[in-house]
Length: 89
Image (cartoon, rainbow, N blue to C red; front, side):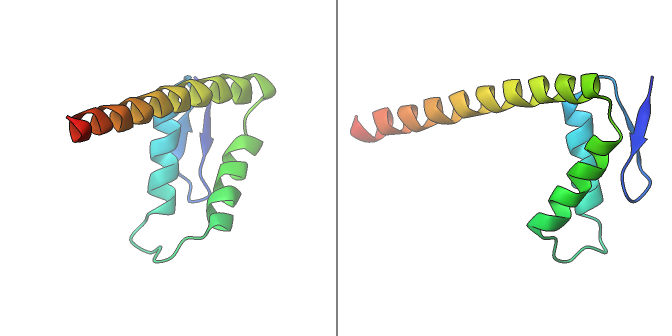
């Protein structure tokens, strides 16, 4: 299995597990030494990870990301609808 590294040197295994990449990204951006991270810091770290991936790997993770975001969006909409129903009842 191939791996890439964060700017801090943490290894990220590329096995199609989007949550593992997100966790590594979170840990890299939220170290005890990082008080204020900026949008630019986050974009820089994401680009650092993407630059190490092949086109096929980027496509795999994009598909996973879009799927996860679609499910999250649906759940948020359903939650809002359920809150509205219980509020109106």
